[in-house]
Length: 443
Ligand SMILES: [Zn+2]
Image 1 (cartoon, protein in one colour):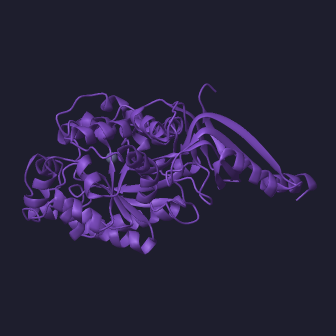
Image 2 (tube, helix red, strand yellow):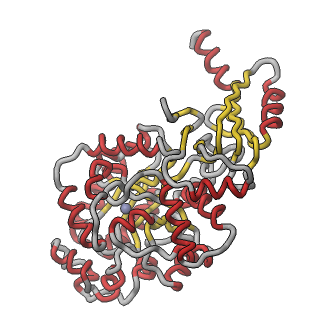
Image 3 (cartoon, rainbow, N blue to C red):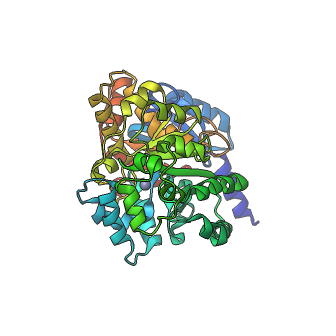
């Protein structure tokens, strides 16, 4: 190492960035008026009142270090955490602009375009750029084609790339599916990998069971679509209905559920019975759940990523958002992909959830606080990233320095949270990931 390099390394370690904003929203704690965060390297070292944070940073640096102060207009928050997306389908936005009568109808349109040739790596990278420009700093990204597997890591965005498995019959899975999956996970050499058994209806029962074992062996997390189709319950209970017919038509009549006339269980208890739920697993959608289903999700510590705008495009019902809130389920927010939603801006889904909760009669004055927490810390919990050395989702010392700045003006802490939740798409002016400015409006 030459002297110049040593100097650069030393300077990097002794430079404290202090970002001051009109409001700072820690998520764990009340919004701070004229607040600040202090950042060293990729970590938050302090958060609080701007004058105090600046004073302490200068004091701590003494004569040898440097304090770089930047002022941001608006509201500084943790970066948004998208708990369910498929970045590789960014090039399939034309499907997302259609109108559908339900999941099976949409699936046909999706499948027709999916089977055309695509540059999945480029499409995923496009999606990542769009997500960053909306304040998103961590993503639970489901990957169906290996070319898109490293998009988060190569793009230096936090989260987990969940390798998706679907359309496997048990015999074929035992013969080659498991070994191919293991080989692919080895080759990917990514730090942040997970497994996504696609859904209860698109994989044979024993394959889903074995994916649980494989995830356990490798110490990786899982993420599944659950209770998304209105016909899913009829499928898992009796092996009948429109969704079951579709999978029979597609050549999977040998799935155990279809062959044996179902499991007599609704999708959530069925998923539990084959080991697909639990604290190292989270599920997407959770639209068609009853009180007993939601109790299972709570008991097993399974977070639900709600994706309201995707559900609306596909022509599905609204998830029981008010019930999830009242009953105390752990929730997160996802956009899903552009093949089923108008934008990758998570704030649009947060606003949609608020509207649905109110329509369903939720009147709690904690609505804004809880929904903004769902879009940040909730997503971190869903991926197990709320604790440990790479924790994110809330502003606290030791957490990764991932931030979004929103252009809302607010005079009270209450207004701050209301504007973050009700404001909808298009209000992020700056995105910072691991201490680096990755996007600024107008640049
Ligand atoms: Zn999805």
